[in-house]
Structure formats: structure tokens, C-alpha cells
Image (cartoon, rainbow, N blue to C red; front, side, top):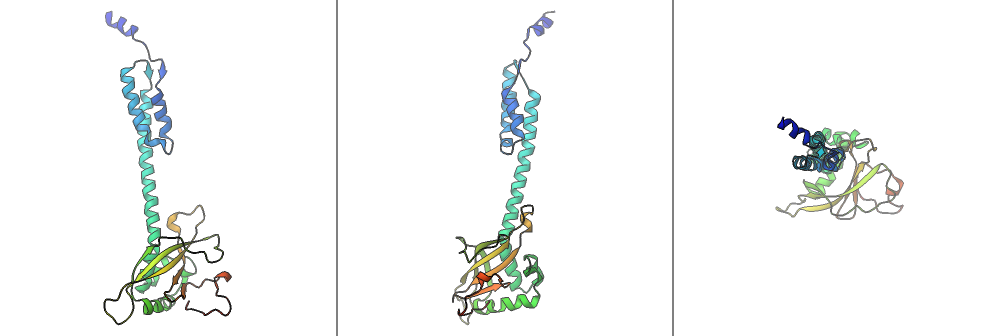
Length: 233
């Protein structure tokens, strides 16, 4: 009888825990999902001390949903980072393949018309570079934006790189040669993934001021003016 009276005298929860409600709401938001589990845990601790609050189910739901959503966001961010890293390394992969005579691997990294190049065309482009600069050591991102050369088409995205060569010549131990390189990517449509981005053009700015381009840039503003000394393309 005394136990029944005690239970009847115990006050029933009168309102929802604000922390539990906030935990559930934030758990479905892109940024708030990382905070939701902490709010849910705080709500459970609060409700242990206060019998006038309810919302244990909401707090647990906020914790579970927040953890799952945060894990998915981390995985998505990791996937984007991996895709971005692969894109940044695509010029290095393509040029190493070209120097090794692997035209098929080179074509896989290129957009049209480079993706249609024959092995003979790739070798004809690489041969003068190898003769003048030596073997390719690495291709790395440059530390500044490429200089604008005329109007850049909407579907093109130029990026500054540097190509490091062993150096040509008879002397042993010749110093490596670093050549500025503009890599033009084919800008994808908004619905395309980063993995679909391919290289449209390579432009080597040679130490003597000439340019070697592959494939040929057909834009009128990319052509040398009449009377200008034509460098190797």
C-alpha cells in the first residue's frame, strides 16, 4: 500500500527534454549530425536527475542517427579527397605512360582528341621533349595559377604544373631541368563526378621560350601572330 502510494505521488514527466529534441533535429542536418550524439548523451544524463523530463527515445534516436550520418559524411569526404588526389596526379600518370611508350594508358587519362591519339602520334610528341630535356622524373602541381592565354572556353579548366626532367646531354650527373607545364582539363558537366574529368591538353613552356603542345590547340587566340617565329608544337 505504501509502495503504491509512493508511485502515485511520484510526478509524471511534464515536458520534452530540449536536449533530446535538439539531438534528434540536429542528427539529420549535415553539420549538426556530429553534435547530435553528444546532445543525446547529455539529455540522457539530465533525465536521470530530473523526473519531470521525458524524451529518452528521442535522445537515443538522435545518438544513433547522428553517428550514422557522421560516418557517412566522413566516408563521402574521404571519397572526394581520394578522387581529388587522383585528379591532381592524372598529368603525372599520363606523362609517365607516354614516356614509357604505353599509349593505351596515356589515352585513358585524356579527353578527346588526345584519347584518340595513336602510339605513333604520342611518340612523335614525346621524342623532341626527351631529346631536349631527358627522361621525365616527376610532374607536380605548380605554386601559382597559370597565366591566361586568350579566352578560356567554358568547358576547359587550365592548371599550373611543373615537369621535372633528368636533363639531356653527355655529361653525367647533369642537374634536373624544371619546365613550366599548363595542363588543361576538360571541365565536366555539373552532374559528372570528379573521376570523369580527363586531360584535354598539355602545354610545355620550354626554357628557350618555345612551346610544345599536345594535342594541337585549335583556338584562334592560341595561334602565334603572323610573322612570329614558330616554335615546335
